[in-house]
Image (tube, rainbow, N blue to C red; front, side):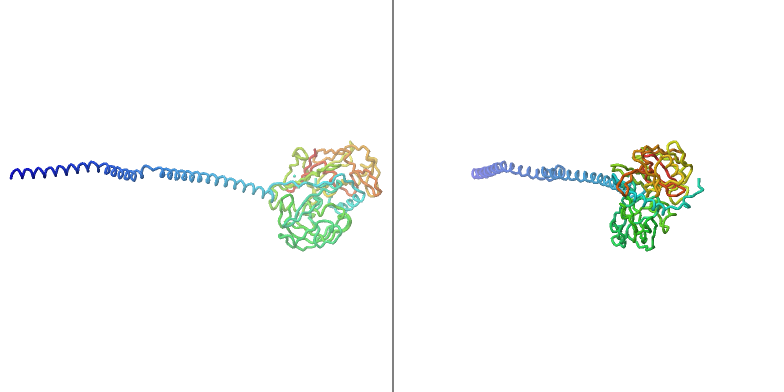
Length: 473
């Protein structure tokens, strides 16, 4: 009995041992997988944990992209800021330049208007007769008597220096004669039927958005008769300088042949307001009062003769005529009576002979001649030995030698070569002769026209009421 019991216990123990051994073997095979699973889980967990701290390859790429994007954004921000500053600076500069341009366009500075020039022109006796008639109707001796102490000019026959001017919006461009011997602006109007108007540019108020009707009658007397018309207002521009609501005249009648033969459409008066028809405020005075030019002056330099293309310049707001004088040094003399640009000519010499002492003189860019008082004219002709005609010219051979002439102004001597005193003229018979540049108008004062200005640049100082002269180089 005991033996059976012992055998049963031994069998149970063997079964238990065998079972445990089998379990161990199975267990010994499972742990590797479990470890792998645990490792895998740990790796996954570690990856999940490290994902927060250590990026994966794709995460690193994404992070790099983000960083690159952030850097790009930062770079763009810096670039944009720099660009903004640059743009702001550029805008500021542009604004400054625009302002400067506007100031230049509206003034607040100066501008040069070229004078046009016709080459190899020979004036005729008819030209001279008309001009003398023109001067005779313009000037009165009583007015001149006093007790006082870069646009291009065109030179027609050394008689007409013209430049460009526009009126209206949009611009209507005209060829005009800059005239210091008058103070009004006039151009042909739409209703003018005179022959001169038919062949010259007309102003059309209906085509301008800035035109204002005035309607006041206008009339100005020339040698060929009265030029008549009506006043109007519009924007007038010369060389980029604009004056709004400038009063000017639209002509309805331009009598005679003088304006038919002229190369200009109208007149730009540059004299004082006191001689302005209908008391119209002249263009230059409006430029000054409206701040279109900061320096209230204008200058005229003329060139001409032979085949030269240079006509010179009319300069607004500046005395810088170095291109013609080589310097900005002027001899100034006061205006003795406001109206025309009138001053005291202290003396005139032909060679060493004193022809005239202190006498009143007027600078007139609207005439080609130099007109002398009758007594001075007679002395000059006697020295020259020329032949005086009934119409007041002094004819001579073109080969004749003429001594230098001297004008004394403001205590300084201005010398002009004697050969410049001779002007070529074609007669009605087709012959070419020479005459003296000095003519007789029966006045008691001198009229210094283009024959004088061609050799001496002239500054017209409105503010200080003075005239400055510098010899052209």
